[in-house]
Length: 126
Image (cartoon, rainbow, N blue to C red):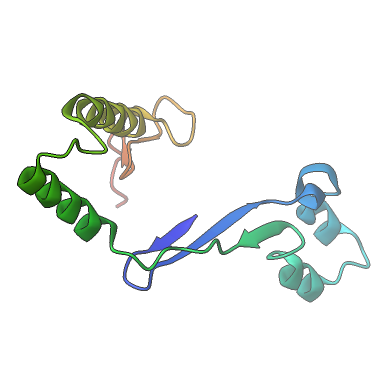
């Protein structure tokens, strides 16, 4: 998934039924009569479904702050109370901790974390 906050565009990529249950592209490419250019052209659409969901043009942060100010001025009950906000922060911290601890290549000496850093230092060449 890609998200561009400047242009307010979201693109979602997911494996297609062809990729999940059909002949894998690498096997197709290994066939003697394989058309590599056609396989390359088929990546987006045939093997990967591409979806661009509609995105609101509203500025969520501005709307949130305007709602907060309205609640302060009028004494109205906010849509999200402090307890829900604390739970949301806890969920976000759990996600960040999980990403930071994840072994991206499933090897003990492999890269760890959101910005992969090798767990074991490698010897420099030369």
